[in-house]
Length: 540
Image (cartoon, rainbow, N blue to C red; front, side, top):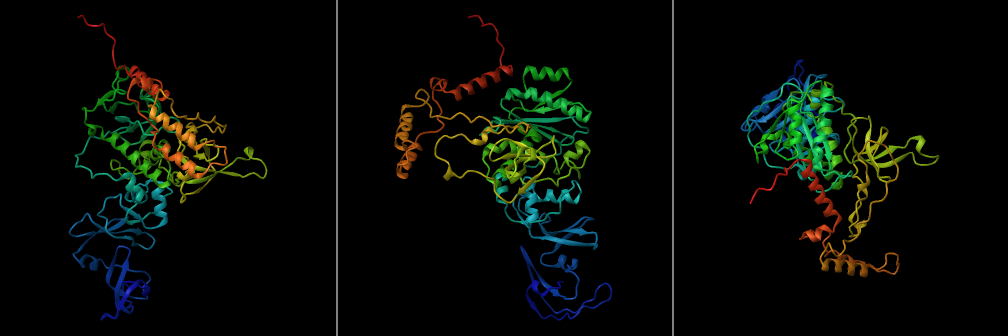
């Protein structure tokens, strides 16, 4: 029954002229008709203008069409299809003040959770603030009071383009229940991911995860070399054992040489840590860490796609996403987040903002003069675990800063130079100068060395000749007589020369600084991991 005639797409006379309600009143019925919703319609709806609110009849719902299933709980109500109970037709929440169930979502939910559209701007905003977390988990956070500062969100079926671009994957395979730790640090999962296609602002190419099996709390570290893993594990072990009062008993990882080497094995043996390695080519046995890395990469990809940021922001996005995931529900824990399971403190999420948002950081009075702007434009990078503030990247100074007083424009794409503003030359990204430390140093960083075209010993002669001809066509950059056609011809010719040429022989690679650095890095990594032992040459 509905009270407003404007809701009806069609309204006709009916035989029922009045109805009886709980207090024996008999409101008049002015007609019956159809009410359209976003994803369907209600037929045979009575129009009763004197009602105080719109009402749904449980009997009518369960007996309409092919039949429905209605499930009530103290917190919500769900309407399912009788033939396919997995298909959710509508959901509602309990209103304790009116003691009624209020429906906020009508429509089918038989599609994967990645395909959701935003029912209102608030839901969309918090969907992005949580790094494109699925709506069911968002609603669960609020319903079970797992965090503070989060409003009730709603959704309906549709497509979130950023989620599809960043998270779309195959359906899960069936799996049986696995063992779960009963105390913190009883089992720690770990995995190293990389190298990533683009180095981070601090020059890192790998990221390392540690996951506590009991609380599912995760920690992320960023590495330049694989050989750094052992020292990072020592720092991680000291930190978590001091914080929790427990000791690491088991460490589960794959068979990478960064884990399986004499130094690592001897340390774990001396400290009573059992190392669990998976069977070769069976990553499913380390599924907790593998799935965590996949989730971090996919959701970070969503955040980068949503704000149009380049891949150089991958480390900031993954760090921010890990902060979010520790404050979201997981199937292993019931009505509690990993952060609360680890620290026994319920997390507050009222400070959450959309990653990559345009922001304005307040400039302290000590750092600006009279009549100068009191804020600077930045990009929101991530949250700070150690300081109560936001980590921001100013567009002018390009140094990471931490500020408390920040204004956000969360619905605006972050600043990124358009392709029309960038010449087709191997110019390094200006954002590569950003420091990843927590210091608020705003001293100017020396400009990066220019990447001149490689010389003849590293590239084939035809490539070098193409560079030379393109430079002659382009002419002197300070010459104001240059024409657009002259520049276009040089750009077209320049596009034919490979920007990242892979050498075919050692002689070509040995003269190139980048390739020499790569060879030295691999050599030192093999030495650090004790990959081989020097033995006497066998006789004969």
